[in-house]
Length: 71
Ligand code: FES
Image (cartoon, rainbow, N blue to C red; front, side, top):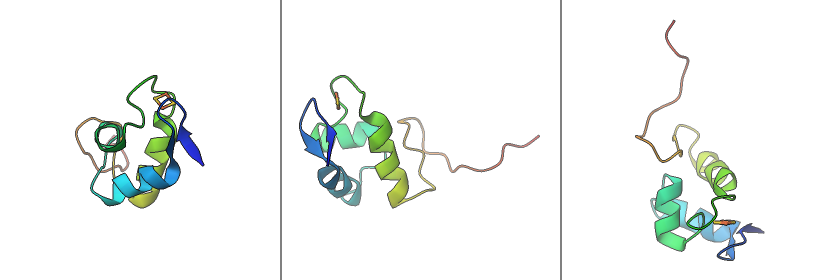
C-alpha cells in the first residue's frame, strides 16, 4: 500500500527504513523520502514506526518513552 503519494513510497519501504534504524519521521524521510514533501503521510509513517516499537516517540522530537504524566 502506498503511504506517501508525493514520493510514491509504500508501507513496505517505510517498514524497511524503520528496520534499518529510522525511529522518527525525519529519519524515514532521510532514508526513503517519505514525508519530506507535503507531510500528509507523516501520521501513517508514525503508525508504522510505533507498530515496530510502541515505546518510540516518532514525532521527530527528542526520543522519550511514553507513560503516565506525573501529577
Ligand atoms: S504524501 Fe508524503 S510527503 Fe506528501
